[in-house]
Length: 511
Image (cartoon, helix red, strand yellow):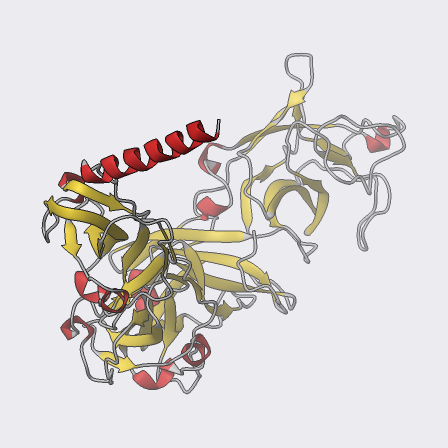
């Protein structure tokens, strides 16, 4: 037994010796490398890797090198040592991706040379895992805000605000804000957004300037007066730009007829529509004779030149809301330098408005003295009561109101928006229920100077369009329907005349 063990041991020695003598190939192995991945900005600043380690305890191969390849496997370089690898400046390679490998090999190999393909190397050759190096282009991100429109040389400070930056994709170690003119000449270099928003553009005079955000690497020695377009491409990146329009004042004139006095609580306010947004041109009042308090207004020149529309609204005299009210009475699109104004903002097709009414007192007691003391805007000619008013739907900020002018005093029949429904009040009607249409019986609560019941024959019936809210107890200037109630009533219903022609306000605006 002892002899057999000795023989097996000897045989083993013989086998090992024979394997070496036969030149048995030992396959190369490169081990494992750790570190990275690395991301660099291609910005003119040196970009070196560091902290890479290699675990070559089980590596096989008497020869070694580091290999840098492109994403497609092209061999870009072969630094032989770690020191040489960490001395490679990846910034000079431009934008792209490359990979770092560790290689071990034995004997001669073919294809292991710069510009070769790492996948085509043959021989007793092994690669480690790879570490990615991303070489990213400079990126300044995206800024939002504006455009900003200022009236300059008026002594009022003009500061931008509300600018935001999305720099989630920004690349570049250095940054600044840049203000240029519209030819990209640098006017200022505020280092922070706070400095941008602290800049007073009023002192820059008339013109256009642009706000940019910049990312860069090398010390560019930026100065006012330089032109951004002359900077070396690849050493900086600019965001999109925000426009600052610096304009002098320009004159705008209005020529309006048919407006009425709004009293002490309301004023008229003009607006120009610039890039879809309203810009106030100022307020004015109208006296009892219909004469406006102002017909010429100073407006930002750039805004006025680019305005597409003019709108006239009715606003509270003490108004904390900077936006236009719903009550817009006139509007018109600019055609060249003039806008013709009409009441299209109130509703449409008032020229086609028609109306019928009956004179009756359905809420009364039936006393003969009440017979002609009520008016209801309905049509019962078919035997069934239907709406007597054919009126277009009103825009927001307006309501219809019925009236009868009795001995010179206009007395309301109530406000409404739907001609086929009852109006919103019945202050003078009797105790019985009335029709579900606009109208009123004048039986109770007569205003001062009048006596109810009354006789409406020969009086004037009116349908007006009222601003809402309305601080006046009198009919507003917009009266699409008006006419005298016949002095001799021979049977219901009766027609009320269209009153649009020549009665609605009109006007024009010139710039």
